[in-house]
Image: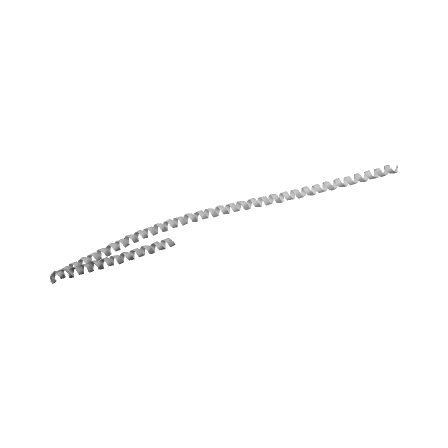
Length: 170
C-alpha cells in the first residue's frame, strides 16, 4: 500500500466517524426538541404521556433509520473500496508480471549479446595470433635473405678490393 492509499484510507475513516457523530447529534437534537415540545405544550397529563411515548417512538425510529442509512452507506463505501483495492492489486500484479517478463527477456538478450561478443573477441584473438606467427616467419625469412645478400655484397666487395689492389700493384 502506497502513502497516497494510506492517507485516502485515513480520510475515509475520518469521514465515516464524522457521519456517525452527526447522526448521533441529529438523534439527540430530535429527542430533545420532541421532549421540550411535549413538556411545554398545554395538554393534559394523559395526552402529554401519549405524546412523549409517540415522540420517543418516533425518535427511536429516526435514530434506527439514520443508523441503518449510515451503516448501509458505510457498507456500500467499504464494498466499493474493497473492489477498488482488489482491482488495484490485480492491476499492480499484472504490471509487475509484465515488467518481470520484460526484465527476463532483456537479461536473456544481454546474455546472448555478451556471448556473441566473447566469441567474436576470441576469434579475433586467434586471427591476430595466426597473423603474428605469419609476420614472425616473414621477418625470419627476410632476415635470412638480407643476411645472405649482405654476405654476397661483402664477398663481392672483397673481390673488388683485391682486384683494385692488384691493379694498383701493376
